Image (cartoon, rainbow, N blue to C red; front, side, top):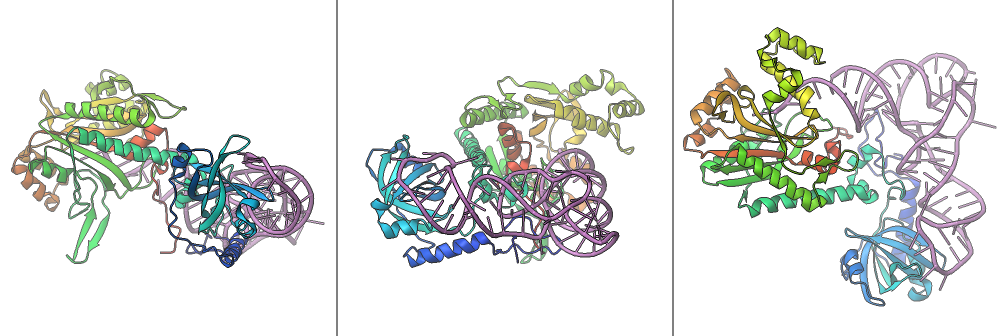
Length: 496
RNA sequence: GGAGGUGUAGCUCAGUUGGAAGAGCAGCUGACUCUUAAUCAGCGGGUCGGGGGUUCGAGCCCCUCCACCUCUACCA
């Protein structure tokens, strides 16, 4: 086996990813052997450090004794002295290893180290002639040998496939990747704190369910052996969160993974992180305030301001955000008489605008295609699109003044749907009718357990879902969801 | 699922009309006690994604398979 090295797998015979023997690995194995002979165990154990490198930097004092640990990133060998950079999860820090300081044997052994190795050093802090804070080592210990080289230091790791398959290399080699995920982590923490501060309880509901509900998507199926039956992974937590409303949780949220059995695209990953929020005794207008406040809070906390999305296409989140009805947006794009046109005339007009339409589609779907293909992607600044046709959304309540529409909004930013919110349907009889329309003749698919819960009385409530991966894409100006997820789904490189 | 693009050294990339596979970084050897992409001298390193074909000759042309990227389809 040659050269696989985690890069492209060999074609036709899809090899299981296995260690390749190459020159680099052989050399490092040789160095490891020599280090062991010099008394350095290649895979060490605990090393008590004075602090992370950022803490050592913050507490810098000339001649202060410190113990520092990290990964060797670069090594600048000057002969009888060596400068090298250590990196840990917090910072980069320079160390200096001088032959006179450390002794001939330890110095010779130090030269057997390779970039990528983890070491610990003990020594005193000083400032170099060029003004850089540095640890002058008087002893060092190997903590872990790296048998493979890290990606190159200038260009980092560019190969998209390798960046996703071996994300750890991307994280080591490309600081901006690490920075993105640090911000994602921070944003999620801020969302939780924001909701906790407003009295919401975070809950966990089943991911393995007998029946998929709460959205219209294909589920992943799985087999529960002990019960001898097929189960599905949830496509949404909605119906369980509503059961909790019945049970008396009047402010709840869940922030976790959903699974949808769909194709991959730059905006779709089959498992994605979703925030769902339900609050009793409010409605979609309560959700509007909540989501706006929440996104503003996250933007301020994580990015320090309300201009988001990076430099290429900055988006100003300063409120108030635009609000427009679905029908008005359609009329704005397709003409004021759109809803008075005959179905044929509307169809011709949509086709003239560049859409290709399925002949079987009723007027409602033709109109919705106009919205999805011609309008949504043009909404760059945050926009609440309200009052969708009732047929499209079976889990929401009708508008009080016009039952043809439901009392909902969809928050669209940068042409992407970020957060749908509803005044939730709490009438069990009406909910049953909607489900019956949805499932048609297949009565077995009716979620009787959920309807039973509703019959015990669900308080009126506002509910909302926020796609966290897409929210991060918008905040950070990334075009691909694969850049927003640590380990995005890829086709397998392994033999089944 | 469909269309297009891409795949060359560990990494980042060149490679002309089909005519002897290259550079930088990394690696190895040597020099060098304040470097910052250290510097200087020298040396190795290739299944050109896999398989098949055309040709005197293929990294380059053809077929096929694999992966990634983009568009598209599916997706409330």
